[in-house]
Image (cartoon, rainbow, N blue to C red; front, side):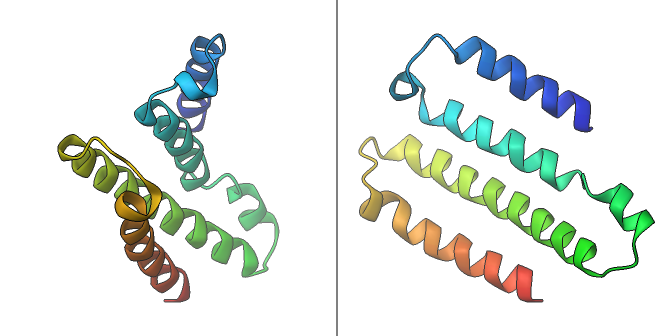
Length: 111
């Protein structure tokens, strides 16, 4: 799954390269972030897991997994709430979602 996600990310960045970052829609920005997160979720450190016996690699893999799922949750919360609300100010739109997803991320990383 690594090559398709990498190629998709590169193709998307290439197609949007001619446009200013301010011209990108919020969904396009999210997709770039989610493609990077899915590449990390796909366990890029797996060869190190086989070559070393350190538990740090497993911890980093678990953090990548929790980060991907929390990123996906944040994306869906923002997309569905954004359908009803046109104004997206940080405190009124993102802050509570970030607190909720951040709490889930911390719990997921600790447990």
